[in-house]
Length: 374
Image 1 (cartoon, rainbow, N blue to C red):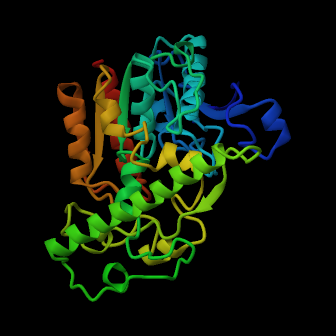
Image 2 (image 1 turned 30 degrees about the vertical axis):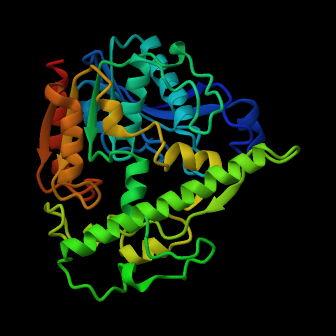
């Protein structure tokens, strides 16, 4: 086993008070864990990063190092807490990691977009090739510069979500009728109490999807109205926190014939109803600005849309037993990548390859083979 090296990178300050740590606010740093290959290696380095998850212990670090590829699990400044997360600011953190690896002498640097990191990686490279995210969704300047975002040489997408905004639109519970009360429910759309038989009828699914978008749009309209009110009120704060209840309701969790693959029924995080009602779940804690950046229809970090604006080679690792990404998800990536994209199925792979060491090795082998060709 190769040594695990702690990487500490100074970054530019971002959102005011994005951390309650005074030290972090005064000297903002991000942290990574790097596995270097023994011996000379291939001269290739990879970064695996998620907007908010801690990837310093990612399962690909060691297998890739064993194959001569340096691999760094890099955390953003929002690791473990996406309440104030701005996707545009995460780009600065990822760019700092790319610059650090270039300074180490690596001539070829690639990004591994695993799970929610896929949209981030695609967003990053699209902006590295042509910087358009000069302003956040709410209109304030990002202060990003071309120097912040050195381009990489390729993207490897694994169990790839298409982006936080798409995910929320497909997981938001449409039965909520009062945003202040997580128990206020329209029983017609309560997925976990409905009398609709499984497999669900196409008409029910279509109505459910329309109701999800209607709820998303209501939240979005409130966010914009509240933000305008704050900005139009002298002495008012520039942002505020709010809750979005019940964000884990997708008919595909209960009906495996929808968008069928090899997955079991249920959620990748356990009982789907429990996750839906949990005190802390995806998109639960927000600010007005972070919601617009991450979860809204106006988010700039739509994965497939961003990937379509890149020019580098792409590897897509499709986990066929994933309960969180589906055949329709892979189709979005496939269309966006076009003839630059090589797809490799990971047959029987669950979302995290948990308990599947052979599939982890298979994934690392596929990545090594692809990297030799680009």
